[in-house]
Image 1 (cartoon, rainbow, N blue to C red):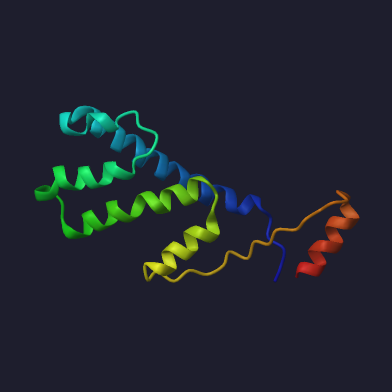
Image 2 (cartoon, rainbow, N blue to C red):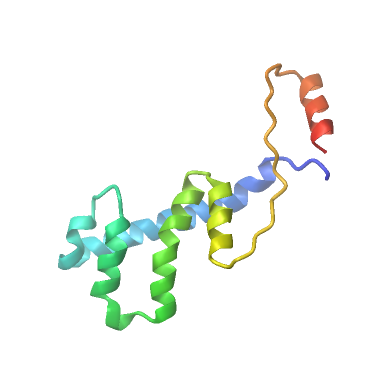
Length: 124
């Protein structure tokens, strides 16, 4: 497998993390404008919010939208916290097959170019 620079993964990560952060902001703004949901506006954990959000807007949401809201928080948190292995496991659990991005972590106790090159060649 050819070496892939970590930089090539930054743009997709930033896009995914940005979408997740924007969704959370929209949910908090919605909570602030909806008296039945205002208690969630500044809460750190939004786990209960999705339940109350679904109940409050039940008649306005399709089954697909309800399922998306139920699943998105778990995936969003895994991406935002860079827990990609857990995110892939969750997607696989949900029936969405994923492939490895080919990223390998190398411990580099001796941070030299020669040692990094040796470890990269060994990882390939």
